[in-house]
Length: 237
Ligand SMILES: [Zn+2]
Image (tube, rainbow, N blue to C red):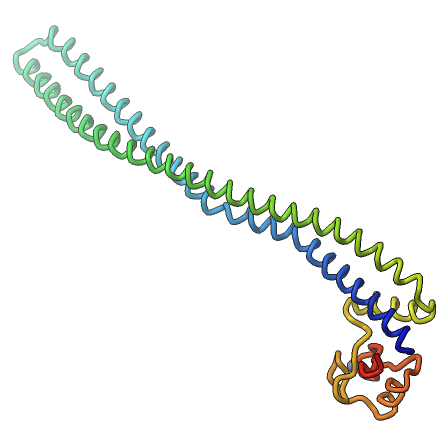
């Protein structure tokens, strides 16, 4: 390739590599956004666990209250039975039942107080978990929005660079351009590569003396026989 063709093709390749890099970055953004949102799951789980704890305490209190009510009904029944007690013995037996039920109620009330204390703690923990989740969600939303902005910037830059590469491509020898495009489409990375020392700048294999000579004298095609990239001699530029 003549130094002029080489320079034009290098300029085009520089734009194309930018386009490839932008495309790759843009393609990765939705996944990065999804990952960022998925990081919220710890905070969500913590809030759900706190809520379950609050519900468990509330249910326990309800159950205790039902038990108290049932004991109170029992006591009322015993008292009614006492009125009709046929003997003193029966009357005193009922009295003992009433007393036992009263003790059970007293125990249940202690339990209710304990559960209420636990409920207060669980409610405070739930509020804290809600706050933590809110903060985590805001941070994640902000990161997702920043990535969205980056995506917009990439789209705008991509359009600009694409236009610039079109202008460069039009000035190129069609044969060179087509061969370059075929290679670029296949490899999706730099395909016009300098010879470094006596090795291919892409695969680092030693280049034959013939290719070194051809590249140095500006022959049209100097292809690496190992990896297939187009080689050029940077000293001719
Ligand atoms: Zn190579």
